[in-house]
Length: 163
Image: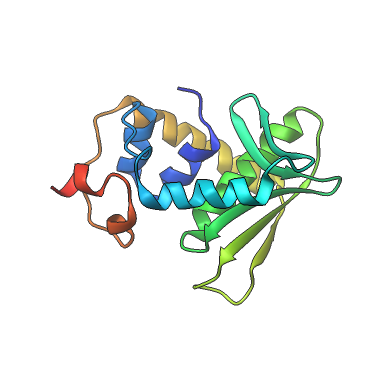
């Protein structure tokens, strides 16, 4: 499986979730929180210019002259969202499109700002290459053991892992 933004996000959130998704075990189609996120995207982007753009294996929420914008339901896992957006910036840069990233959260619980600006620099690019290498090694290996972490109960795989 080619690495995509979802795998990058899951890698930071939970290695097991990343492995399950990469190995085509998908339990998200009937999960309420995923449905809520999809509904929010549909409301936000329905037929709007430069939104929901698919390029290769990435799907960008919005592309402007200055920014690649990624909308998230909440700021529950900022680090995962940041690296997902950095991945999008890298893919676009490889195609000659140089932009800055902007994360926008519909709900803010962990921080005071609803928007975070993300820039792809050389250090981030090198770290992203390491992350992608680690994801490739992870998904080729055995399924990671179950670890109860904060957020597990809000995951589509919760019942698969714990029941």
